[in-house]
Image (cartoon, rainbow, N blue to C red; front, side, top):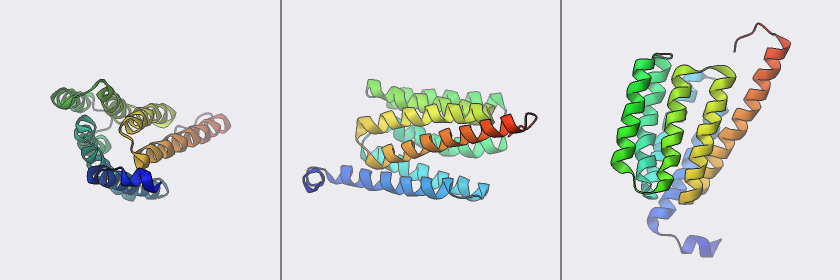
Length: 180
């Protein structure tokens, strides 16, 4: 472990630290029962993720993560508004085009696209499935750049989504008319 840390640049060490901070914000957010506090913690996590991506020089991921912060705020206020969603998708494409460096930049673009469509247009189980796929795309990006905190955070999001999907499915079977 000491050899691994000793072989890292300062930017890589700071990237790992930012990823672990993002993980802590994600855990605190998903453990919280207050929706407003959850949103603040998720915005904080995304600030840490953006810094993490910048330290790892994953510029497409960094820029798209900054847009995720805007998307969270807009999707809460304009859920179902396809025009605003289309605008966010267009900005995502423009930012990805401007920052694209390698083929693996497809992972953050995929994650941002899935997250945008999911947050604006879906609810319940479909939303969680799409956000789970977005988390998988972010995880693949984090594997490519080598962010331990990022991998753990997205793994936690995947597991949490799966558990929530199962819980929602059981509720729907128990109460067929229920719309979560």
